[in-house]
Length: 230
Image (cartoon, rainbow, N blue to C red):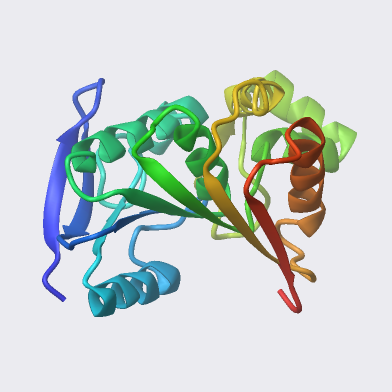
C-alpha cells in the first residue's frame, strides 16, 4: 500500500503525524480509540478495504501519543477533538468523507461530524460516549476522591495504563461535551456497531444514546447494530 506520511502543525506548535492514501469517490478518516496508535488491526483492515475499492484513507495519532508530538499529560479531550478537526480540514478538498471511529474515537467522530458538512457518514465502533464521565461513576468513592483531590489518576491499575495518568479535567470536559451532545444535531447517516457482550465499553451506552437521539429526532438516519459476542 502506497501510504503518504503527513505532519500538521497544531495550535500549540506540536506536530500531528499520520498517513494517508489518495483515492477517488470517497475517503475514510479513521479515529483511534483511547491509548491506541493509528496502525492497529482495525485501521490496517480498513485501509486494505479502501485500497481495494479505490477510496482514500487517512489515520493519525493524537498529540501526546504514538508518533505525534507533545506530552500525554499536556492534553485532554478538547485537544484531541481539535486534532480531529485539524486532520479533517487537511482532507476537505478531496472526495466526501466518512469517518470510522473506535471507542473514544467514535464519540470524537460524532462531535466533529456535527460541525463539518464534509462528513457524509459515520460508522461508530463500540462508541465510548462520555467516556471519562462514565468512568468516574464506576470507580470506588476512595479512588474517585483521590482522583479529584490529587488531580491525576491512571485509567486503572493495568500495567498498560499505569504510565498514562489522566487529569480530572478529562472528567469535567467529558461531562460538558456530553451535556450538549444532542443540542445541535446534523443529519449524518450513522451506523453504530457494538458487541452485545462487550465488557470494556458497555453496549448500554450505545443503546441509551440511540434511544435519546430517536426520542429527540425520530427521523435521524441511525442504524444501531448490536452484534453477538464482544
